[in-house]
Length: 372
Image (cartoon, rainbow, N blue to C red; front, side):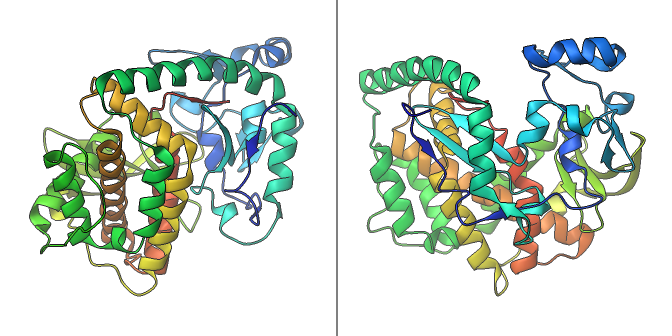
């Protein structure tokens, strides 16, 4: 990998462990790579399936088609020494764009304990083993990014990602304020090319912001397939799913058990969930998370994907600030949802729990690059 620079900044100085009784990663249906296929075809042919969706791939089966991996028993992997590469990589994600960055899935409780193995050392070992996949993806990603930048210049919406990120870094504290977020979102729609310089907050229209946050959250939860539903691994290691029904405007809280069965625990009208004010400690946790998002290549790749899908109508700065503001609103609304069901609050603990609930979905957002 001497010819490719790998960014390990997100994992540097951190530790990661696999907590006893968790099993969250075993809900993520892992792809079976070509070099792994022979082993599973020989020893576990009935446990190989093709996933649903537009781009199906060969993967390990799930219990009853919607639960955990069929090889998870008593929250332990029965084929641990032969598990697929994607299982071995979790909670590390290798994003390949015009740069390569290792990102850390903060939905894993094992990265919050401060215990375990050195994350950077583990990440480097994973990258070494994924070398061939990274190089193949890099060739394709360079072409995709080159075409994207060309399209931006042709449409007159090209911006400087370094400068855009720098401006966010200088205003991290303000991005935790609802009035500021509201003003940024307004300006992204009004200004041809916006800047964060000189923004003066006005009283936040909380009704409008709650409506925007609810719509975003409902969209991410509106699925009839539990496999695609947002999952929150509770403090008691329960697997909590939230399924939204757009027609009724309700969100059902379901618990998935180890056998793949769902039990309804409670329900709430989405309109009853309102973003609550941050409590002491919550602001600092949120600010740290915004800083991580602002440095993730996958977040930038998601912004680029949204620009492409919208036909290059918005300037890059507008798209970036708008996506970041929407992400923060979504996170705060989910924090309020968790507080409704679990009483987690909006302080340090509440925002941490919201990140645990949210980050896996954030890393799964569409991007013009790819995770390998």
